[in-house]
Image (cartoon, rainbow, N blue to C red; front, side, top):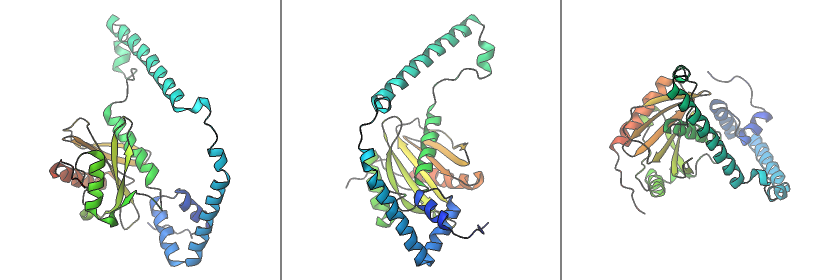
Length: 266
C-alpha cells in the first residue's frame, strides 16, 4: 500500500541519515527526481552535515580513551569467556552428580553461539547497516558489469562468487561489497532491489560447514534464509514475507550449487 503522507523536510533529512524504511525511501527518491528544488534543499542539507563533521573533526582525532581501546575490550571479552567456561564446568559437575539434569534439559544451560547464529547475526547486521544507505549502499556497482563484480568478489574471497540472477523473482542486482566477518575472514555482500524499493541482501562467506538444507530465522522484522553449499555458506535477508523470500533463497541456492568454485583471476 502506498504511503499517503506528503514528503517533508524530515523525510529529506531522514533519507540522508539512512533512517527511512525501503518503501518510504523509494517515494523520497522519486520525489527528488521530479522536484529539483527539493533536491537542491537536500544537497544543502548534505553540505551542512559535511561542514558540521569537519568542524567536529578535532574531536574524532582525539586519543581513544583507554577503556574503549580494542585491546582493552578484547581482554574484557576474554575474561568474560573464562568466567563463562567456569560456569559451564560447574553445570557439568552438577549434571554428573545428577542434580542438574532436569534444569539442563529445560534450557537453563547457555553455551557459546553456534555457527548458524553467528552467520545470521552477521548477515542481519550487514543488512541493517547497508540497505538504509542511499548514496553508497554498495562498494562496486553492478553497472560496471556483473562479470567485473564477480571477479572482484571472487579474488577477495579466493573462491568463485557469482552474484545470483534474481531477475525472475523481481530483484535487480545493485552491486556488492566485501566485509570482515566475526572470525577474521572476508565475506561478500551482494545487494538487490525491486520496483517497490525493497532491498534484499545475499551475504556469503567461505569455510563454514557444508551440506545443510535451507533454514529460516527472523530478527526484529528481518527474515533470513541460510544454507551451506559445499564450501560456501550464504544467507538471504529482507523485510518481506517468508514465502516470497523462500522463492528467492531457493533460486540463489540453485545457482550457488551449480556455479564453479575456482576463483577467476584478473
